[in-house]
Length: 213
Ligand code: DX5
Ligand code: ZN
Image 1 (cartoon, rainbow, N blue to C red):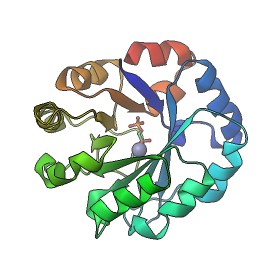
Image 2: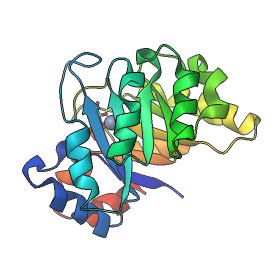
Image 3: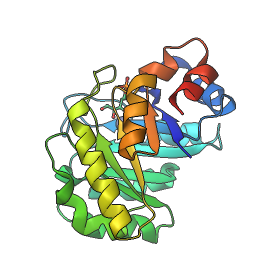
């Protein structure tokens, strides 16, 4: 079953709590929270205080996507703030295996993400430690970009390797997801779809979420 994780980056950030409530009621499986530090990516968003404030307002699964340099410095504080799934970038971390272990030791789900230029094989040695892998389908940093169809072979390659090893790992795609690209991503083996613009810029969010599945 395909899961949908709307990214609040495209929501009305001045009404974040009600935006999250709305997608929760519209049947979203989780909410995607994009953390950017102006270092790993050339944009900034929000950090732990906002996530912590939001935690008191919603019980939906918090799918936190760290686009920050040296994520090991802050992982524990994002878990304190209320993350249920913590994703960090392979390219940003010195010891990804250790960080995946640290996240698991805190009792939440751990995921690793790769940027468009990073091959799937770069994280093959980490698969056994992952609950989810995130294949970026745009360059991280901004919402509203176009889906990179040339990332689909990477999704297929990861799905094949996960199946070959008999593992149970979600594959998430993030960037430029709309009903058309969602279909292509699902067919390639992705089962968790992040969508910012296509959900939050739609006036019927339930229909927008359903259309992705
Ligand atoms: C991009 C972020 C995405 C972004 C997706 O760096 O990781 O989560 O919000 O936005 P859309 O769906 O508009 O491409
Ligand atoms: Zn994201």
